[in-house]
Image (cartoon, rainbow over all chains, first blue to last red; front, top):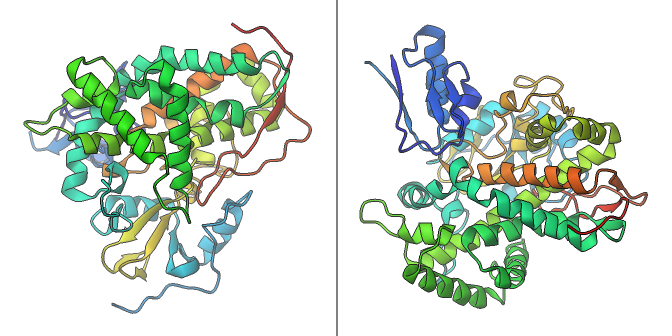
Length: 64
Length: 394
């Protein structure tokens, strides 16, 4: 699955990297950087958890 | 309305501030995670249950009561479509990048407040610092001219007092605050600055803009949401740091612990230890049916100490790494997640840096007795008499 963050919608709340640090990390301003864009299996579960935590619904996890 | 199976055998009182609400709440929650409170209200406990309440924003509404006629509800009391619209227009002004613009002014405010008492050798760190700084930062953020700050802070205090339970909800000085803000809005429309109000006036989503009355409501909301909460975070942090001086000493030696101090305080003793929601329909939580129209006290303070989620949950531990300590629900979860979280963390950071610089030997006075600030779900500290070696103003 492909993990994509809409950088216009990301407001730097940091919930994604708080809940799923193996998939998301903060950039140097605190916005979302996807470090595992092709998440499968265990990472996929985390990717979804992080996406669901986003207050702005800025992250999508979908078939590439 | 379906039968409610709420267990009323061991109620908990979420409305009366006490020194330690966490122990009795933990006990009550062990019987049943949905705890009965007075007046038909319930307290929801446990990390998973608290998160579920936040996530189901259709069943658990932010709008607790119909808005008073002639008033404009703002972000924290909106739901659904209206909430999304308003939030989209303002959230951009609160990103970590945007909030960085008030970092220098926040340092200046912190130092100015310390200058007022540093020659005395004693002060009340609540009344003379923690309860002034956030209001002044909001004033700066909004774009209130420096000369008008004290008046703005007074109006802010009035608005907060009027929002307390058993109060009308609106202060006598509210029309003055309103007129003043409308005046600033007019000036910024003609001559925009880089302050928040100017940004909000210019911000648009497609063709959508904020009307003047919406802007005024927003300013009131920023005062209500961003003043007491941050003040209580500051109070609680200082209480933990100074009530065991080894903690303050460790921080003096290693300021890299500052983020840990902030995050652990947010987790362990959140400024609001529960957040209110109103059920829109009958809804089930942990096998308990909560009837429609019930006030739900979503206990983030209990969720943050869930042993399934954190080790030694009742221990305030300066060594928990901040980056791994951000799954607390102090700022909520989901679409109503606090837009001020970056600002709150910035203010907390500046407060600690300033106090470490200016009052390195600060100590709690002998007559200090911890009392939560209150009312209701608010934690923080009521008064914090301190002593220190007098020094010069900057």
